[in-house]
Length: 156
Image 1 (cartoon, rainbow, N blue to C red):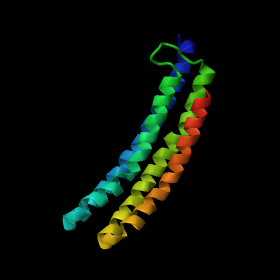
Image 2 (image 1 turned 30 degrees about the vertical axis):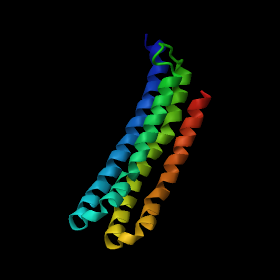
Image 3 (image 1 turned 90 degrees about the horizontal axis):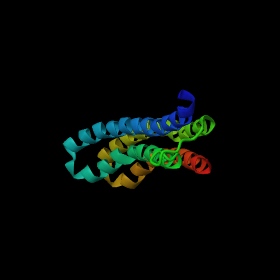
């Protein structure tokens, strides 16, 4: 019984890790940004829209992880009852790790960059474009991990 379900277990574990790790990183990063935004808004409520954008930037990694998880669920046929063998299940697990791990790490660091950008905005409200560029650069690595995961899953 266990052997016949091993493939689906590995594939589901990969999908869960992609969503959980990237989503956890996003929650941490957005939380950091939210704390910084709340501090700025006590003094400068007119900056609400700008600090909200900066706060939300680390949330994209969670979306990327969820996207990969949904693609895996679609590929393994979870809704129609088909299941991959153990080897293919392990391949799905491996394909999910780039966005899971890179999403976790990059979202946390993007949150830190967002905090710094929010602090910059508090002192120089006219520097929104420059402030937004700083955490957006961290996004590059999450996008690269997303591409690796999606390209790998699509080939399975």
